[in-house]
Image 1 (spheres, rainbow, N blue to C red):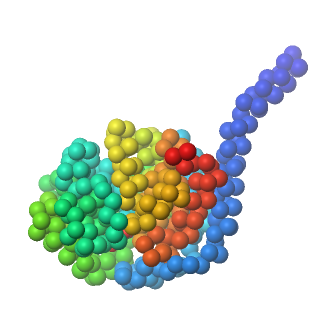
Image 2 (cartoon, rainbow, N blue to C red; image 1 turned 135 degrees about the vertical axis):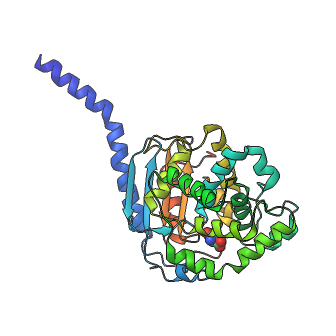
Image 3 (cartoon, rainbow, N blue to C red; image 1 turned 45 degrees about the vertical axis):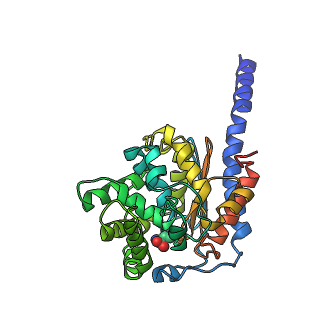
Amino acid sequence: MNQLRILVVFVVSIICLPAQAAEIDLQKLVNEVHAQFANENSGKNPDYIPALAAVDSKLFAVSIVTADGKSYSAGDIKHELSIQSVSKAFNLSAVMQQHGETAIVEKIGVNATGLPFSSIMAIELNEERSVNPLVNAGAIAQVSLLEAKNANKKWQMIESNLELFAGRDLSVMKDIYKSETDTNTKNQAIARLLANYGRLYDDIEESVDLYTRMCSVGVNTHDLAVMGATYANSGKNPVTGKTVVEAKYVPKLLAVMATAGLYDDSGLWLYKVGLPAKSGVGGGIVAVVPGKYGIAAFSPPVDAAGNSVRAQLAIEEIAKRLNANVFQ
Ligand code: GLU
């Protein structure tokens, strides 16, 4: 009887070993990658939004959330960053749910701009004008496309959608919102230009304001990884178990991330890392490994294209060590 018990325990532990080892490895992986790039000092905080220039440049966090909801984090994981452009990749899901996938192509566009995220030239050069939902023009256009009774209701829609992805209540970082509102004349110009071309679908000032508020929502790096893991899990948040977006839309949403997620360096990113991802000038980046992981990293200094230097290096290294390139 005792021998049988020993045999059963032996067999069960052999079966469970790979899962336990995988858990331990992912924690070790985030710790190691965090240590590896903590002293990488290139890049600079963006200063066109004054409040972002004031954020501590040394902050650095890395987080992985699996498609079945397990979390692994290292570094300044409690720090709240402003979500900035990362929000665009998730708000698009609300717009797609409301209008369907064809409307995104017809009313915004899904091509890469190959130009900086706030480019006026991109609007002038492309007949679609807004070009892609993940650059500023396209993101203001996607906010304008959302239909709600009034601005307050539209805001609730935007915020609660981001909350469903993150799996918790979120709020606007007031200092960032004010700083960006005081200085966002270029985004106002972009919205006016879109309106001129008939490519803005609601009030100009209101659309810019809601867009700015959306970019000012505070998240930590773990939240970003949960958001990514929700896409990795075909639209169902693996932590809360709630479906946020229909699975049929997820490949379209990830395709848009692949074309323009890292601004004018999106091609280079895809070439090097092979994962759909979205970055924001707040220093956050989230990458999606379909069926497996949301991988997020945050650190304020960004490169010339606006992508966090440490976050790119950390996600690239994690993707390499997990063999996560979707093209292999
Ligand atoms: N709120 C920022 C802007 O409109 C977002 C830019 C970004 O993260 O790419 O410039």
